[in-house]
Amino acid sequence: MTEKAGPFSRQVVLTLPGTDDVLVRRDLPWSDQTDRFVDVYRPADAEGHALPAVVLVTGYPDPGFKAMTRRCMKDTAPYESWTGLMAASGLAAVTYTNRDPVEDASAVMRYLADHGDTLGIDTDRFGI
Image 1 (cartoon, helix red, strand yellow):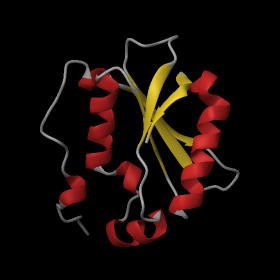
Image 2: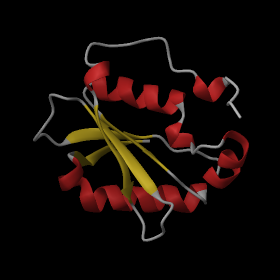
Image 3: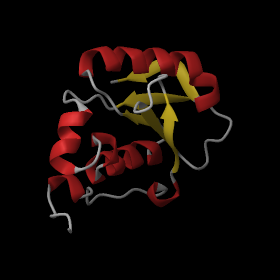
């Protein structure tokens, strides 16, 4: 069965210098539960620097979204291209899987604060 093209398979049209060079650390577990992951996007030339981070928070639980689209929100083309643009702009960008949008957003922020050093994130500068 082939997937239908839809709004979640379309990337943004805009690109910036460095967009194609963005480094992504995918599926880093942020919880002891097996279906909770973060993806961290960073500019290729920012190795060794702690960057301000933008966290894309979704208000819809992934199990329901996945039932409709067969993928998690963080793995859709719009989210991947938005985070790529943010990273190309000099920021770290974070997406994550969730079950409970409110509780999980708080838990992800705690995870990022606790692991900012290893993720290259300035834990004093978050945008949501």
